[in-house]
Image 1 (cartoon, rainbow, N blue to C red):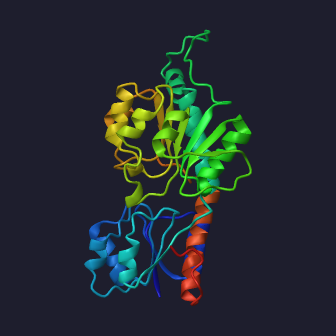
Image 2: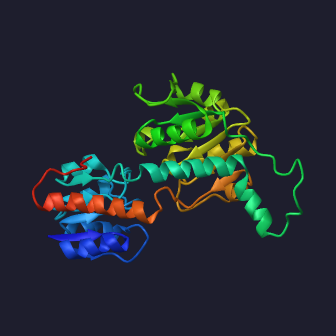
Image 3: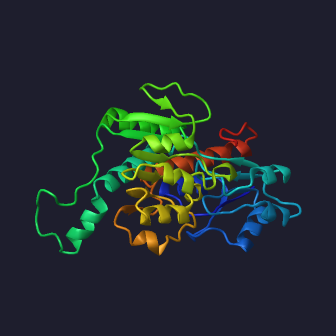
Length: 316
């Protein structure tokens, strides 16, 4: 059975794939184009896609009798795959939960600290040769320790972020989730998103992508936030209404933002690039050798289970 891996992987993952399967590993790092999406379904039994490979209902509908029977997604998020359309076409979908939790939580803390303490702005100042020495009111930022954290989405990643903030920085934690969580630290479940946004100093977005969360953070939510508050998004870019965020930042409705993802990724609005109070990262959430290898191995575990007729470990 033919397997197609749609992006280059770490050496360990590629070595296992070549040793265990009849695999073709695509050398291009960009998302699949329409012709390649068609080829994926028509010419391969199993495809290992990832973020940006948009397997929409239209793509499935364009291939009358797909050869593909499994999309073993590399990544926990799978909003780029229409799972219902895949099922209708007889194609199973899996993902890689768990492997990404700690690395993504670490990036959330990186963005929170960088934005609060103006670290990106400070580094640019030093690199430009424009720093003229310390003084008592130089680049005053936002204190983090003891502040109030709000988490939108209290799944694995949201809990890992909250745990770091509570135990590491003594922060009070509030969260929005569909159901109460049993946690190892004190946290308050908010009644609704607006009340959560209005009460916290840092609002961190950690919900899954998909139709239910598009523009969840909109103009109304941003208007409810304190003028001193900061927004951090490590979820999916489209969860935040980018135009509304730009307007809120320009109007001073919020103090700043830390972004690892973007609504029209990899496009980043020039207006955001020009703002010193916004920290911008190139989707680094899971970007460590160990984590990307663990993700790849988990994706291949799903492939191996499928080929041996076993239950899929991470079916979505």
